[in-house]
Length: 474
Image 1 (cartoon, helix red, strand yellow):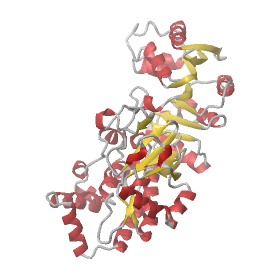
Image 2 (cartoon, one colour):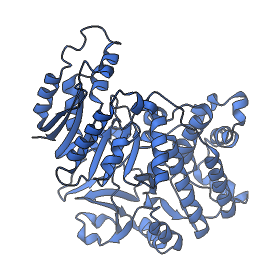
Image 3 (cartoon, rainbow, N blue to C red):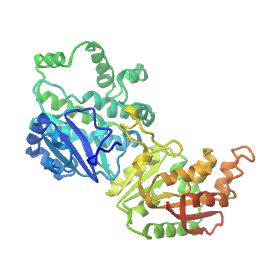
Image 4 (tube, one colour):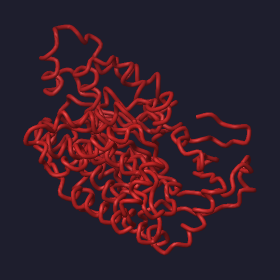
């Protein structure tokens, strides 16, 4: 992220709407508005529906600040300050339940806005973030006055980044994450239509929002936005019809579901081979590492599985990001955390051997996982052997990556599973003999010591696993 001489850092993901841009100054998240956007803001900030959404935490905390106190802000008519989201995530890192709840939050906000004479000009899933398991709408600059006779401008974006991915998983059982990761603008109707032929054409939501929508797009491909709006006004399209359309979409989204199916990883805590003594020793060690120093602002729990250690970390940290590869496991964890009212843990779907790269325009519009990390504590429990043996990632690369996720002076809590451990032997049995001669505890310690200062080590009672706390950069 480029930094101007004034210390202002433009947000790389905020350039598509010239009327309002997000930038950073120190730890502050600011938004500059041009004259027209500033006028819309003044109307919005005085609207009862908006102040209610702010009070309920459904829209990110926002207030106007004096532009004079912001270096280089003379170009903007108004400057807003937003609350800082604990950890920015991308929709392709969310589980099915998370994407559905984010879609419902957007539709809820839209249903509050329309009767008050406002709408949102965008419908992107990227306009929502999370406080733990609570979705929050962040694109305040998306609100604009609603003009009679005009449809919801964000409908196409909503379909491509939220509704179509949900249909893909709910109706076909296909995980949407790779589809969204491959294209920042989401799934096109033409990409989805071939998958919904025959009797599948009649599945809920498909006739109207896939086939009819796709046909309308093709029919009006040569028409301008002004032409389409004029046609709708002539046809009597009203605010009431707009609201009824949004309510219909909400009803559809609420009906869509995909119960997480059991997988090997869903039962990992029972099958991973830990004894009761090992588990108790591991929990004591992790607790000591979490409390041995300043309270962590952010903890990354890599390979979180069912969230056992994420929950433990949440008792001692401001925010925990629980990363797990299996979408079904993450969705189960999300639903449990949400039901429990846990707001300090954000579960994410991610393959640690293929973490989210930078994406979008020039590869920086959506920041990579590593660039977003900056954790105060990184938990890498029962992860190293899966990367080093299961995915053939060299030990120095594994250690280097763990260190790259850390803020200066952060703690790395890592478990090394010895080659003779049953889980390591199971992984090695599927590999050619002698492929991993350097997978040894001494080698792991040597590499860890080049990246961090090893502060504590403890061998678990089973004798085949060793835990380490290391200080990054030490």
